[in-house]
Image (tube, rainbow, N blue to C red; front, side, top):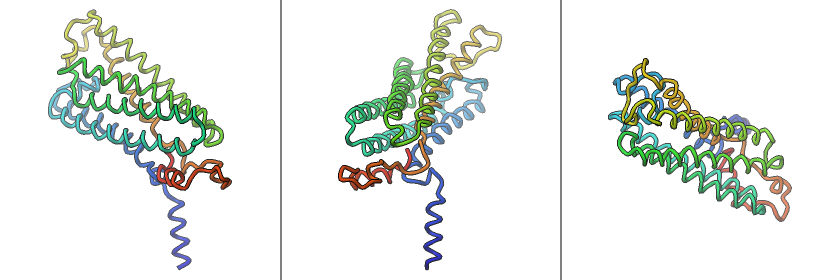
Length: 272
């Protein structure tokens, strides 16, 4: 019996990071969202609905059957994103019960995160070639508001270090934020140039490009850079350390320490 107990303890301590608490949520969000882009791209390319060389993400979800696959998989990503951001909100709230600035920023971050997820749902269900302007609104919510969400999380990481985690987490989040912002800026500039009228009209409906046509550089830029902001936003949702977070006050068991219900929240949240 003692041997079994020892083995049980060893099994618990040998868990991977994504097995602890709800760390599976951001891991599932990253894997599922990447799979939704890859599977829709493969389907659209095999059926010759788009050119294989870096098409728009939205173009790979325009024509059936990949449109159906693109929509349903991104809807699941929306649900995973909402769940991940809510758990992150509860975790930060439990760790900082007496810091009004952190509490206000945390609520703002949750609102921005939910808006970004709603934008992803709009992208999934309103295709570019059918309802272009609604699709653009969804992209602005997903990328633009998502970047502001990343900024809020970066500030929260700054305010919570070094008491709750190392400075490395802050620098990682800051680097990812700068990468995302530069990608969004590049995507915006290339889109403005591409749709300025210099390379023809009705480019929204165009799914195939001749390699000799003008605008190939802008097209490739506009095809690559939408991937980068989404990738950085997914990376920023990943766990920030390998174990459940604990506040210093709970370790000292002082009267002002985190309550038992909040400690339960931390243990459930894991390391999101």
